Amino acid sequence: MFASAFTLALLPLLAAANPQIYGPAPGPAPATSAQAAAAAPSAPPSSSGQINIDVAPGGNFVFSPANVTASNGTLVTFFFPDVAGVSHSITQGDFSNPCQPIAAQNGQNGFDSGLQSGTQFTLNVTNDQIPIYFFCKFPTHCGLGMVGSINAPSTGNTFDAWMSAALKVGSSEQTLQDNGPSRHLQSDLNNDQQ
Ligand SMILES: *[C@@H]1O[C@H](CO)[C@@H](O)[C@H](O)[C@H]1NC(C)=O
Ligand SMILES: *[C@@H]1O[C@H](CO)[C@@H](O)[C@H](O)[C@H]1NC(C)=O
Ligand SMILES: *[C@@H]1O[C@H](CO)[C@@H](O)[C@H](O)[C@H]1NC(C)=O
Ligand SMILES: [Cu+2]
Image (tube, rainbow, N blue to C red):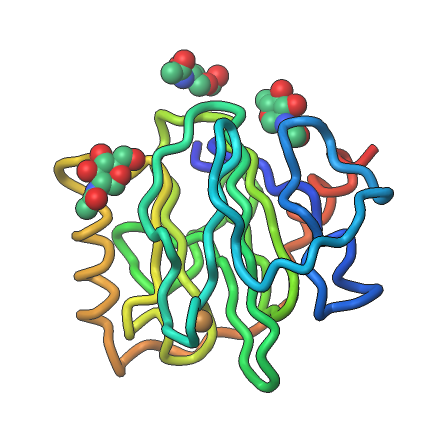
């Protein structure tokens, strides 16, 4: 059921050409490859229908903001820093199994950007009734609290509880394989870029 909570859209259009320059955050209209580069070192302010999240701002192993509310159709864009030798991911997690990728459901995997730097990824929220939990899969980062949530409830499986669960995993975090961006994610991207 989680799989219908989002689609992952609008791959970093400029990253391949020049990973040191961020593209503009995509607006509600479909992005095109003609968009000009904006020299933004970090996420620009959020606006209506567009939430921007910094990945590891200032070199800290956090997402900022880490807990957001995003109604249907809201785009949530993650800005990955370009720091030599350091990469991060947005990997969909499971509240009951922190720091592990969510199991496939109905044959569909959760989203996983794979380890990245100097790029951006966008999620399109398609069901705001389903919380989305995510974490960074770079070794040790999740156990240090590099986690986030979209539409987490205010009681029960809250963002705070998700953070606590990750910190409890701590140094016993398992090292996860990096497979790059997930396949289903790629096809969503292709669909959304048409
Ligand atoms: C986001 O998803 C909604 C619902 O599927 C769709 O109508 C909208 O066009 C999508 N937005 C983008 C930018 O792909
Ligand atoms: C968002 O979309 C989902 C799936 O279509 C729907 O179940 C939900 O009610 C919508 N949310 C709102 C606030 O209308
Ligand atoms: C996280 O955001 C949700 C709404 O998406 C809100 O209900 C909840 O209170 C927030 N939790 C924290 C710890 O800020
Ligand atoms: Cu990280």
